[in-house]
Image 1 (spheres, rainbow, N blue to C red):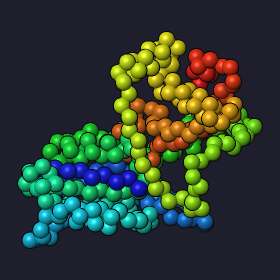
Image 2: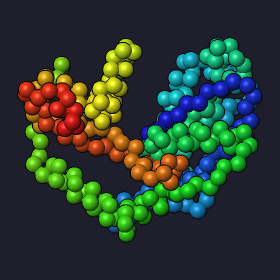
Image 3: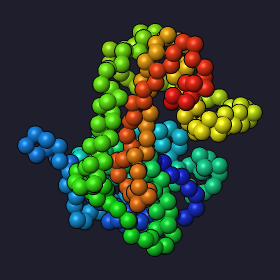
Image 4: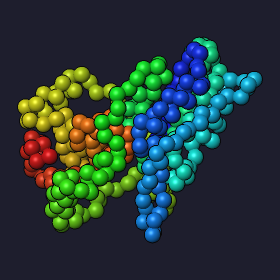
Length: 287
C-alpha cells in the first residue's frame, strides 16, 4: 500500500479538504478503479463517479499525543476491498502542539491507497494537485488516463512496441543466469517478515564530483556508474561473472503520462557480466 502522512498547522477546513480529494477522484480514473475476478481471471472496472469521505476528529476530542498518533496510524493502515472503489482512505487527526513544534492548532492528514492504483510518481502528482485544489485553484484536464495507457499497450502501435520489448528481454534471458552465491550474514527465517533497517552515509563532495566527471567522460549517467560499481562489488564477493540486479523504473515512457495517476512502476532485471581482470571502465561501458 502507498501511505502518505501530510502535516500542517493553522486552521483547517475539513469540508474543503474533502472536496479537494473528491475532485481528485473525479479527475483520475485510477482512483475510481476496482478489481474483481471474471471467469477466474482478474479484471478491472472504472466507476463513472465516486466519492470519498474524510474521517474527522470528534467534537471535544483531545489532541493526539505521540503514542495516540502511533496507535491511530497502525489502525488506519489496513487492507482494502479491491472490488469497492474508490480505493482511497482519508483521515484528519488533531495532534498535540508539542508534536508540531508548538504550533497550534496542528493536524495530520492521513492518506492510504493500494499500490495497484498508484505509484511513487502518482503520490507526488496527487500531493501537488491537492495543494492547488485546496487553495481554490483550477487544474487543466488530465492529458491521458490510465485506461488509455492500458489500451495502448494492448492495441496497434503500442502492442507492437511491447512485443518488441518482450522479445528483447526474452533474448537477454534465453540462457538463465546462475543463482547468486552470496553467503548471508545469518540464517533467514522460513517466512519473510520484512524486518530491516536503513543505513545512511554522506558522500563526500569530491567523491560525488568524481562520479559525475567519470560518468560524463564515459558517456554514462551517474546511475549507470553506480550500477557498474554494484556489479563490481557483487563480483568481488562472489566471483560470479553472470549477475542480475533488479532495478525499479518509473515506466512513464511518454510526456503525456507524467501527470497520470496509476501503477506504472516496473522492475527491470539488469544482467551484467563482470570478468576477472576487467577494468572498471570496461565494465562501465558494458553496463
